[in-house]
Structure formats: C-alpha cells, structure tokens
Length: 272
Image (cartoon, rainbow, N blue to C red; front, top):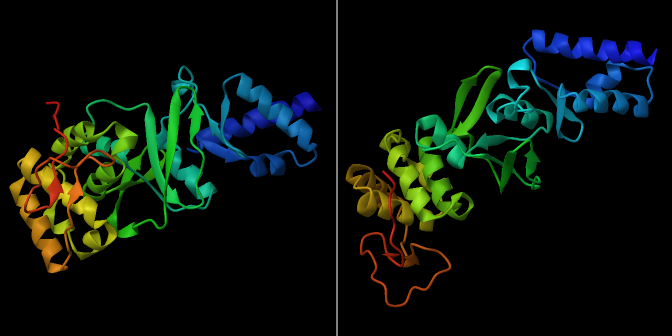
C-alpha cells in the first residue's frame, strides 16, 4: 500500500509538471494521500527530495525539479518566486541587482536574489548554491512596479526608477557605491523621466534622492535626468540638508556639491 501511494504521489507530481505547474504545498499532498498519516506523507516527500525530484524551498512548500534543471537541483528564482509569494500571501517585488538584470544592467548574474516584501521579515533562504535575500519594507509601492512574463507565468519587478533608488538605499547589500555606480550607469538607459513623478518623489527618502541626483549629474553625466529630478524635488518643496555620499564615514574636510548638498567623502569608480 505504501509503495502504491509513493507511485501515486510521483505520478501526481508528474501530472502537475505536464500542466505547467512547478510547485505544490504540503496541504495539496494531504488531500492526495488523505488516508496516510502525517509521518507517512513526510517520509514519501523525503524520498522524493533525496532523489532530487523535489526541493523544499519554504516550510510546507515544494518545488518540482524538472529534468532540464536536475543538474542544478533547483529552479531559477524567476520561475518560482511569484508562486511562493502567493503561497505566503505577501505582496512583493524582485529588486536590486535581480531587477537590474531584466533591464540589461547587471554585468554578471548574481548568485544572490533580492526580493522585497512587507513586514514581518522573512529569513533568507540558502539552497543548492542560491541565496534568496528578503528585504522588508513597511509597504510595497504597487504603482512603481512592472510585470515580466516568464516560462511559468509572471514576475513582479521594480521599475528602473525604483531599482535605482533601492540600489542607493541598500548599497551595502550589493557591494557598495562603486557597484551602484556601475549598475546605475547601464540602468539609466531604461529610466524614463516621466516616471520620476510625484508618486516616485513621495515614496523615496529625500537623502536618497539627493544621492541619486548627485550620481546622475556628476558621476554618470546624465544631465537631463538629473535636471528633471532636481526640478521635481523643488516643485515638491523638498529641503536638502547636507548629507554624506558615503554613509557612516567621516565627513569633515570634504567638499560638498552645492546643488545636491552631498558631501563628497568618497571617490566612485565605474567599471566599463
């Protein structure tokens, strides 16, 4: 009987793949094997995990490892993050370097994936050489997000403009300001000044807007974008206070940019 149930579970998982699904929950399996005990169900799932057929990516949630990804032992995050976040019933977006890659602004595909979601915080996931970093926000700005089609449906990512300010705000997570400048240099090709609007200004910390403006104008030479950003900030009557370009670093003895009020306490080098 147990062997028959194991075969039935395997066939059911194969049928999900045939229907274009790449994941399932523990509750789904409980319905399929309703006569089995909890211990028996988990034993069957453990067997499939050891064979590399499935992978637990979150408690009670499993990925189906199709043959094309069996050598990796895990699916690309773009194929399962949306389903996982729906399972967790959380608004989200893919951001930072992971979003920049969709706009051709990542020089290499990072082994870390960045997902923004609301509080309470989620722990990072480390599986099969991949790390998913969760970044917590008090709210997710739905109007600053975009949808991207994937093999398994859709993925929500940050717009180029939101990606830009997130890169600056969370620069320590991606390797510092040199990395930010390098990625931003390519990302500006996808940025649209029409999307630097009231909502964008309202959703972004003033100090981040100042740093973005300084980088656009003085490091990247994107004067049109910089001018539009400055004018938008002035229309909203934002007040710029002196802030350091490099946070948590000495500021005495360094010049400040008069327009953006940014203390230039570090040099930024862009990789071409």
